[in-house]
Length: 407
Image (cartoon, rainbow, N blue to C red; front, side, top):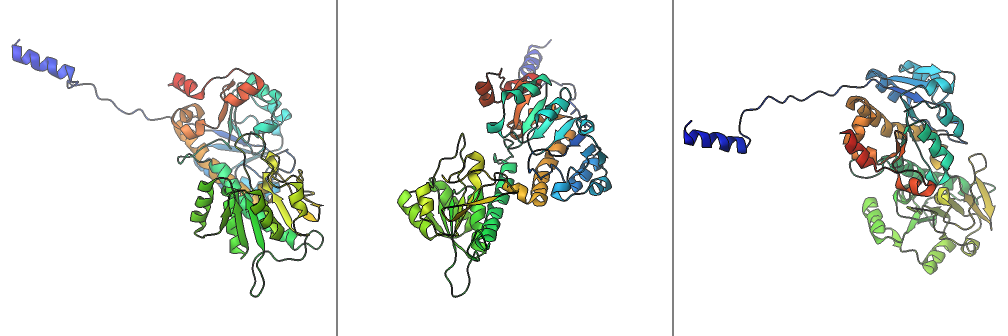
């Protein structure tokens, strides 16, 4: 062989330039899923995971939807609506729990864990502070894969379900405040907002997150004078930018806050804690300084509340009066408007489930979708959430390592 030719061949091989076999993309095999929608049994949980239109979308894409009798009734969706979109109506929860994926709003109750089958996929809320070791051991024994929708992230690294529910809670809190401000027993016949020739009502909002921002939007739309308090300058600046208005903002300083409370008609407690209990911002002494007939909506009550005089109430008995001030302390405000909230949840869940089908199953999509992986707290019976593992002394595996092992 010619020396030059031999050198040319060696050069091409070293540089990877020699002819190779053609590499064709292997198409992914779509999965046909069965999605189960059980009726919520948690106290005053009125929402449903998917609305009839979303069920129709699943059916049109080759999936099967099983809906328990009257699962959507509390949210004002009838069985007939689901049936018209191709869903199957069943009359026992046991039939629903034969589905591949169980989609519900509230966390599983003990009797529901008993009904799930081996290696089932559960998508629901977790409410980690209210869970017990028994709950996690039950899912582990069934080798389930469980996703908490409050931890799922989207491409912008935000939490789409939490944001949707927070927007609803922010808007609804102001409508609730308006209702009780004009209530003949709990209020003083005051209209929330502004009116020509009279001083507008004052709304004080604690917390400049999503709930606080949308409460401020609703208040301003009604003509109220809004004051927002938060310990984050960044959040306060962001609220002003998003609202496109130089509203009153302040760091939470006791003297400044107390001055605002004395003239306020409505207080919205929207302080969120990333871990543990919400700090108590408004003391009982501060509440005593407020106007008689004013209203406190403590949205933070699901984390303990940010008002010292708050205690948990229910949708059946939502308010109480303390020192002449009306307190509304229902943890699940979004469930007060279940029809709207169910559409918001469905808008978040429907694309996710369709993607699971397109990718050929949950394991496949978890390998490629980082945001969805963040929602997994149990994968095939293995705890993947470090907090749960440390709290209950359960074996832990990093979800990223488990996904790498599947590749």
